[in-house]
Length: 420
Ligand code: NIG
Ligand code: FE
Image (cartoon, rainbow, N blue to C red; front, top):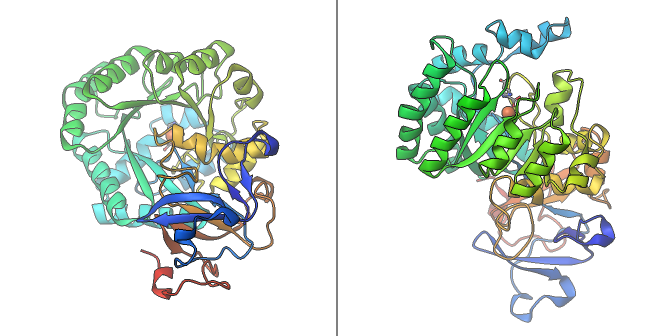
């Protein structure tokens, strides 16, 4: 089976191996290489045969908002009649609409709907998901969202990373951005830290959300508490969020549709990953997209993510986002595949742990359908899932009619084929 491993220049950096084998022990990759080189000690171990299928590392969705109440079909209809995302937000709709419903929603409702989204993402090959809070905007609801994320992390088989996005927008009841910023810094961040509910802190640095001064204040305070940083930067306008992210050593700056050369050089110098979200740009009718060639020239690491959320993009299919990375941003298909695997892992500080098949990494593998011979069919087959089955932490899980493990050397214990 060809298998996407480490970077190799011959195949656009995909690192494909023909007739490969992976040894998995206790949910981790123990060894990988050519099947003909398989060390003798493992030759007689229980096997899952890929039966000639292409196998890739599990996909990594490094930016999502999958925990939320309700939907935004109403916003969508308004946008289809010409109102912009920004206009709807500044008129008190958009994110604010979701905040009202999320505050009212029970934990069970939030858990169930997010779990269904994660289930569908898994069928598309996604085995790691970052999830943000940000539809509470008060301590109680932000904690509720983060606790739901924690429960998802405990009960779903995907690897889940949690981000506190209390600074998504200023809630309608706050007197000013400054007042809400103080609440974030004085009360919310310390409490989230104390409860150990998030690894990252993110800020929506944008006109109508948080300006540069407030973004800096929140991020510096988060950093001093030990959080890793992320920023929604230069999405709808160029506001300086990317250079701020770089100067504070953020792990990623996300969106970047309006980033300029100087921003890209700052990100590259700081090692801050650029997380590009073309489905959000497409769905909101953006007039401008990031250009992969500029990122490449500046040396910025490019990751892709769905940004799955009720407003700017309800996308769940990372394969489709890879397609958009190619056709809208100008990535090569190989680049787009790296951007949903190994580069995305860097946006979560998880390099070597997810997104590549290397010893020590979580054994998360995607098996493509038998008709696929080239992994670049993932971006090519626009919106069509070619995922036949997924292995999460060494356990098989088959979407739909998938039959991973049912081939010639099927696993001895069919019970292992059930979802966890
Ligand atoms: O990444 N830009 C801010 N946050 C989300 C949108 C959230 C929403 O509209 O509900 C984004 O696009
Ligand atoms: Fe987002």
